[in-house]
Each structure stands twice: as structure tokens, then as C-alpha cells.
Image (cartoon, rainbow, N blue to C red):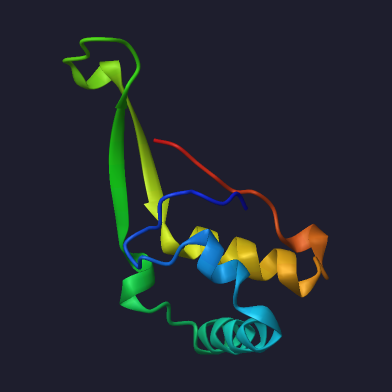
Length: 99
């Protein structure tokens, strides 16, 4: 995870996650375990931001733009995955999709 990236809706930056330390990792793990065990994803983690980027100068039509989506869950889960030690690499794959 690179520093200097814009935070999502939760305003949690990569630098903040990296500064958590051991205790923070334990707490994040507890939160993820609770989400997994309950099967309920908090509403805040379901929100996303769509950003349109022009593919070419003077873009006007929808086809002239590329859309990206930012999700808080992606950053946080990726950080937890890296810090936990990649215990089960076979079950975690990069599953980005586009429409």
C-alpha cells in the first residue's frame, strides 16, 4: 500500500493504517472476525465513491470517461491481509471487476 493516496469516505489514510502497530492489528482482526462471524457488513463499509476520469482531452460523452470506485473495505482488508502474514494465500485473490 502506497503512502500519499487519498483516503475514502471514512477519511482513513494508508499512513494511519500503517501507524496502528501491533495492538491496532489485533483490534482490526477482531473487527474483521466479528464481521465474518455475524455475516453482517456495517453500512459504512458498503458506501463507495465513483470518480470519472477523462480518457481524452475535452471529454464530453459518457464513453469518453473511465469510472473508478473507491471502497473503504478494499484498503482495510488489504492492509489486514498483508499484516496478518498471508496465512492462506489460496483463498485471497485480487477480485477487482469493472462494469
